[in-house]
Image (cartoon, rainbow, N blue to C red; front, side, top):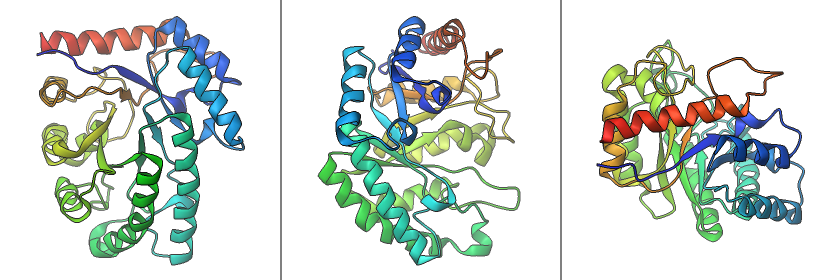
Length: 287
């Protein structure tokens, strides 16, 4: 078996930088081949400015494959308040247009931002609201040549959340099957949901529709966003499954380097070490 994908850094880790030029210089020094973008890169930018950003990353040969859509309470596509849900759909559609201008192919979307137990609020209530939102968002994705990737959520201390169980994604696959809707496996969230077997179980439920990954580690009880190897996830099972489906796009390491920062800026050496360590871990497992 061999590794068929490249690694991407999480764009949220670069929010402290003042310019894209600074980020690109860091990526060159650290040999970061791809970045998962987010709305912090496009806020208050004109279409022309966004196209200019795409060009400088393309010139630097840094791939922009996935884009994480906002996930605050104001961005909830399953909101029980109809006015807020409609406003969220309008806002996310505009941001999807910006992601497309950047050249991204996949937009990561949280199925809800309202993390209350489904046993209390009712699974069907969430599903109904999300369905109404997807009826607008999927045609927009088709128009923009994007795939919406629904991400699995962590459970809460008082019970399972909407999209925190693998069977939820089995239902999503049956209910919303189309070329412009896929899934993003967050390994850390899956680990919290079902402990040691979580990432593998979620992988199998999502396998046919996996278009993105959030690769992160934790001890199984907290969403710490650690680099692989610093938590308790069995990466042998994860990386072998990724190789089996021949995933060929950037997989986002949704974690910062492990080390001291200078005003929240990690050094190029720390970034380079993290990517090399994760790459070595995957290569050793697959060899």
